[in-house]
Length: 193
Image (cartoon, rainbow, N blue to C red; front, top):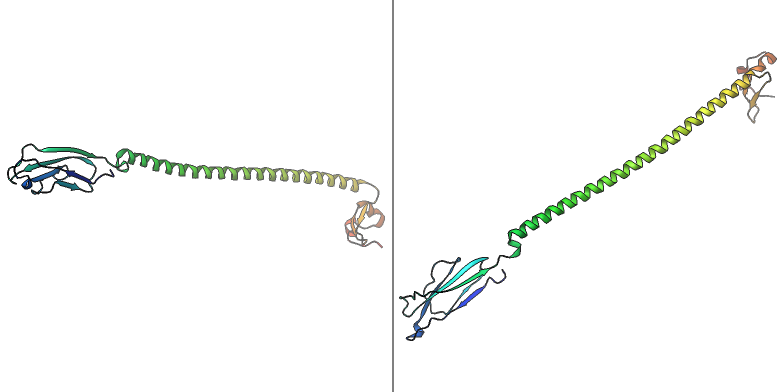
């Protein structure tokens, strides 16, 4: 394919007037018409496309009577590999595989990222459920404890009370009512002293 410049050299042999010998030639497959008669002894073809050709040349001693014994030379110019069908099909397959690989890698990356996100959400949900469950248990235990405390405080015959460091009553049991003659709720907030 890179040898598309061809020169053919030829000589017409005669014993009389060899300086007046003329030639005509053609390259079948490229130019099927005979060239005009010429005294030149070579023919050059440049930039021939890939294909099969036959160079033919005839000689004449007087420029009118052409030799019936035509000399022939066959030649083939190979198709460049990048212009062959198999190369184009291979290139198409490679491009298709490259596109498929890019799409597959992108899809795989997105799937991995999605799975990581799902795992993170599941881990956080599990942790939150544990925390909610622990809080519920704590709240239930606190409610039970408060209920037991109230039962104990309200049913005991002794007076039980709580005050702030400033002496303000925050709680006082109902056992105080017969002693002072006032409801226990009315004493909450009063100061001792």
